[in-house]
Length: 164
Image (tube, rainbow, N blue to C red):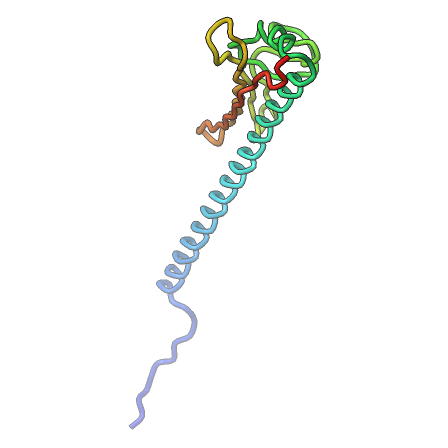
């Protein structure tokens, strides 16, 4: 006995809609993964750049300290203590130190771009007034990823290591 089947040709509407739905789900997942990966990549890039900027700022101040005597260094930073500053190529303002051009406020890098960074540092005394054998340099670099503000902070304590 032989069964007779109707010949079916082509794809039905339900199969087409099902395939389309599965395709949309797969494409949505891939786009979401790509956006997440891109955001993480930018975040890592900015974290690295922020850390490098903070370290560079500290090294500039450390080199400035090493280029003169401790008493000259303390005298030069005296007006900047507790003020947010950044190292700039143009002298002026209350943060200016001879040999190291500092400006009050924050330096904005790549302003208006997604990779915009803001950096500043503060010098503070760590010892009681009158005992200026140790100062702290704290550097802060901030940036935004979407609506989130991220930052990196670095600090060092500078001392009179030459005992002059």
